[in-house]
Length: 162
View (cartoon, one colour):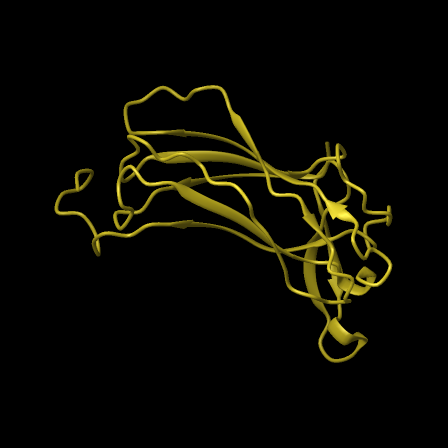
């Protein structure tokens, strides 16, 4: 496993050159999130990856990027359980510089509370991945990862209690 590479990306091959994280097979990043006080307790999370094929859209048309997320989610004073994995694999649309969205699974939120913590590993898995480009510059680019959740109030009435 390796760390993704920060690479140049110039949409449409003109204008400003941006930097985005390019993921070769088995590249990974780690992060953690605290569920905010707006979270509707007990509801599911919907994680997804925003990505781009960059200038490889035409070449990679229909090829799959196997985005995966390993996670463990626990309430305050709980004990972290072994990780679970969700598959957010996505096929390339075939158009250069497209904003692609990979999402097809939810994370069960039964009994989860505000201020619970989810620890994560986001990676590109070689299993099921059919992307052809093998260099950093040819790899799919991560635009952003986020998690949608249901909201029921603007916050909580107490520090760690709804």
